[in-house]
Image (cartoon, rainbow over all chains, first blue to last red; front, top):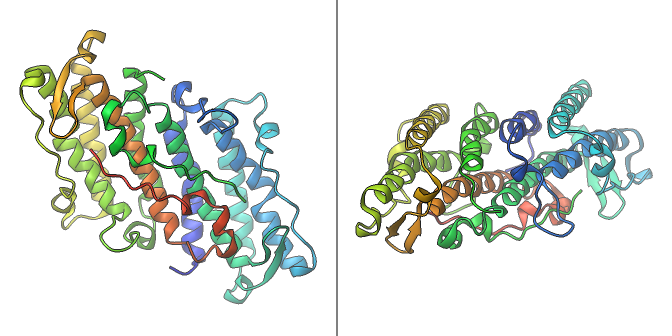
Length: 181
Length: 181
């Protein structure tokens, strides 16, 4: 499937209510536990998504339109959620994510992007030349990678509780950790 | 984490609104495409969840309480969703899943299970002896395995569109297919 801006926006719109339906007021045993060591909890992932809304997707889209390949994107801080989340409840983070996403989608709509704009190019600090189309498709796929991660983190909490069914549950075989973006 | 019936029910309650928030009225390019060959689309997965509500979880829970290990569970039909979904829209399937899940949670509450009941045993056709506790924990983990799968199926549609970001997106490295239950 090729990138389609309307499809991307349809998905980006749905991620905040999806995470809200899944996580709000869920027992903390599901939302605050991680997969061990320095891995993330569902709470951490929502903080990471907030940090992306502030510093990654729309700032980079605007950088492509303003500077093209002449200026390299600011590197993304993969531990930025620690600051974002400090002292906040999960409910607050969910509200904040929904608010920022909504503002960013308004800003994206206001750009009135034409197909030719989507081919404009920028420079990623590690990946080199990327297009605006690739950036926006990645924004959507990044939501999905973290929904995928959250479902895996939560399933991990029942790894022993499911007993012999463990072998049938694909999510318990998955080792695909996210390392974006 | 040990199995906790309240935690299980909190999760089971949230799966239908989560899938509703994610999938309802989403473009069909996200919901009807699969990962190739005979793999499932998000639409198929919702049909599979419906089939599980009808024939798997609560029927097996009742079988454990009525017959213990003396009667083997009916095998689960992994292609039962084909019949469930025939001629229906995704919106209809989401409504049906939410209705059946709600009825099943009412039925589960009505059993008033005590901790000792959770240790009661039944017989799975392939896995042998299992406990009611393991069955109920698996019901919740099975929701998560399919949320994990849906996010992976959807991300797959943008595998090429994300360009060089592909290597950073964990969901695109995942090969953990579900084969339950």
